[in-house]
Image 1 (cartoon, rainbow, N blue to C red):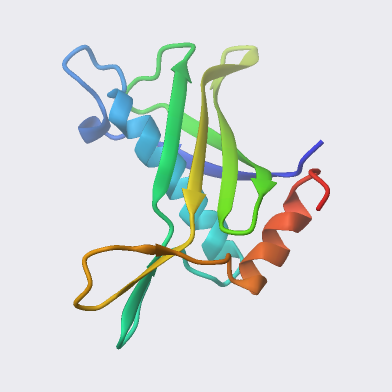
Image 2 (cartoon, rainbow, N blue to C red):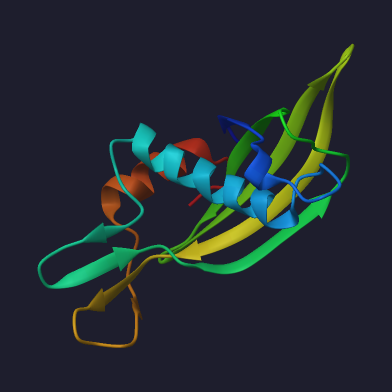
Amino acid sequence: MASEFVYTRRVEFADTDTANLIHFTALLKFMEEAEHALYRSFGLVGYRWSDDSVFGMPRVSVSCDYLGAVRYGDEVDVRLRVREVRRKAIRYSAEFTIDRPGEREAVARGDWTVVCARREHGCRDWRGIEIPSPLKERLRALTAVPE
């Protein structure tokens, strides 16, 4: 079983819709926040601007299944798992849970894939690149998927 990284986020008013339920885009934002918090926990970044180029990790696939109500003020744990580390891509999954009276409830599940990419200043297109070694090593330590 893969290890997990837990990111906790309180649902703010701006994250909700007129029914006081979380807007679907907010959970996608929470997934990305958890991913970048993971990178920071390694002392690394998922986006970097340099003199000659930009390094980033754009999403190439995202899905999310909603299982229960999430409301303003709820504290959501995003349990991030590294599912697969390839040469240029990383596949993640997350389970969103909330403490309810007497139980911990799963309220959503998400999956996404990111690719490492670089864009030189003045160029329009991004180019896929290999995952930097320091990041790849840290991520592989979190996954049960063998090389």
